Length: 383
Image (cartoon, rainbow, N blue to C red; front, side, top):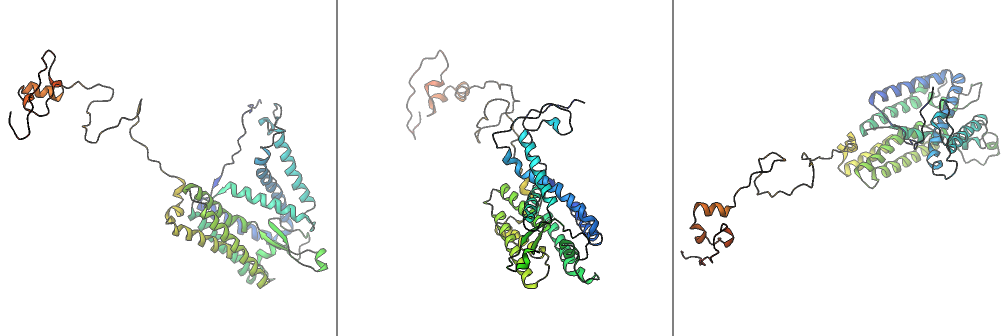
């Protein structure tokens, strides 16, 4: 089968997916189901999660680096004509090199993922690229959808961190057990769906078993969807990025409170417990202050109706019409019949009126008449 040759410019835009309330409910149910499965079958499913992370993170890294690579002035040649499934689109050589680089980075991390000294750097880079790719792909259309998603996941996070210890035999929360790996696991593998930051520890024992602070991808993506919505709303209403800045600062403060609570309580904390109130309250406060809460809530600022004129000219500019002038009743394109001048009508009806009216002039006479100076009539006198 001969594929259609594509020599034109490449399409760089990725299609975004608008999240609906049904999708939110399905997503939360899937998260609960997957978390429970990981708790009971961790040793088997952990490798599935690692494989999914490798595929998703390599795609995200490619998506983040592609705009920069396209600006490079070299390796712009394309692949020759072929019938291969992907290469028939004739991608550029530099994009193939980028894809090879992203796959190589992911493979290196997959091989050395348990190396605590430096593998966490690659994991964080791949994780950040994955989060950016998801924020670019998934889009919340309204602040109502943002509030619904954040509140549902708020209770989800609190339940699996603070409530599940009373439901398990070990007394540990399901969320913490899955995030850090069960203590009785035979694989000693860790889930890669977190950002790892080494803790400041001067103990010599830390060189062998370095402790890390973990931040789950959900704690980045869920508030990040609200931050992305605020950024798009700023662009639509042409504000000075006040929504985006306020929500970003609120996210930073919420994250700081999370780490403070982690240090003070010495136990795992649901980050959404602090991030969701900070981001939602700050966004609502800015909308109330700017008197845009209705538009911000419904997202109607993304579909501004531009009024269109009901009159469409066929040719030429729009004629200027005097408000006192009568509206013509003739159809367009038909020239109205020529009407006699008011002076001619007046002269035909009463010839003597031309000599008595103070507005009479020599131009009102018909052809063939001799121009005679009209007598000057003083105001208040009769002719």
